[in-house]
Length: 336
Ligand SMILES: CCCCCCCCCCCCCCCCC(=O)SCCNC(=O)CCNC(=O)[C@H](O)C(C)(C)COP(=O)(O)OP(=O)(O)OC[C@H]1O[C@@H](n2cnc3c(N)ncnc32)[C@H](O)[C@@H]1OP(=O)(O)O
Ligand SMILES: O=C(O)CCC(=O)C(=O)O
Image 1 (tube, protein in one colour):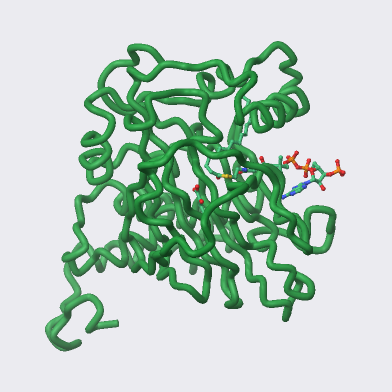
Image 2: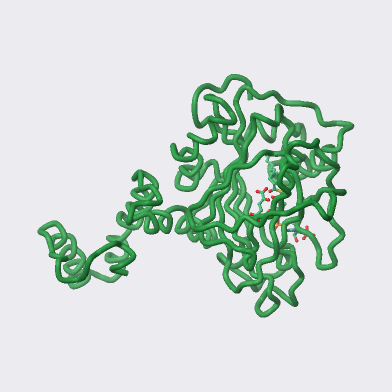
């Protein structure tokens, strides 16, 4: 640990007055109060680390970078999964293999948090200047965060609760534009950040390089033996011999990609959960399109059905579901 945080050794570490006061506060609390007060006393600190992690401008070269990444997002994910906080509009998704199971609970039951725009802790990711600086290159200065996800890809090894290796942790190859009723595509970009090391073993992203120069393809559910997650549509036809790149990434690495890029992710063959956080951004100067009669009609119908079921919103259009969830993160909300 000393090495990780660039200390030369233990001897030079001295207790300062501030450290002494801080530690004696907790000792007194523990010695003189009921244990519950100690837990309550720790709360400000629990929130402070996360705030510091999000606020400090700590680049990957800084000794505290790992500490910062560890304090961003993961704690909030835990609290949401345990239902300690309730976030308006948030969809908590279970993997199809356990969707009907009562026996998997907490973090292990959560494959994805979707639409975290009302959770200040997680949404801070979408406002990070380190991310927006690159996003702006694609969107221009008026930036909307349109779609937010924290993905917790579950193990698919068949050795634990997830059944006999049904491969449902895979994400079929798709183009994100299939889900979006707004254009132009060149003003939309996804930022996807690894919350831990991602590699082929735990299901990193797989991309077909150059495919973003093509057009939007027809998408539908792939015919997978073990079942497919709801709304996980895949591109119907793509050349199976198209070169592929597996994006192996370190914790904290971010990839930015075009909404026409054909991509997906593999099965998680480890016993751990592979976490990543992402946001789809669009220029607020983009405009909505009517997808009726196009290849996007199938997903539009599914999303509207979900909006009716969840919110009883029977007159909501596909475009409205996006306008309601989009949040301005920079500049002016001109059109979207
Ligand atoms: C303001 C209105 C907002 C409307 C919300 C719109 C969401 C739109 C999604 C857009 C995605 C854009 C993505 C672009 C980027 C590319 C991608 O990420 S592609 C993948 C996109 N798809 C998803 O992300 C799907 C996300 N999941 C969900 O939305 C939900 O978790 C859900 C699958 C719809 C289920 O949620 P919920 O209805 O809350 O679940 P339950 O009440 O527990 O169960 C209901 C019913 O559904 C079955 N079920 C649950 N989970 C799954 C699953 N993973 N796969 C299949 N079926 C599932 C469950 O068993 C219940 O079935 P029953 O028969 O009714 O008992
Ligand atoms: O994180 C993953 O496994 C896949 C995510 C993805 O394909 C997407 O965000 O469009």
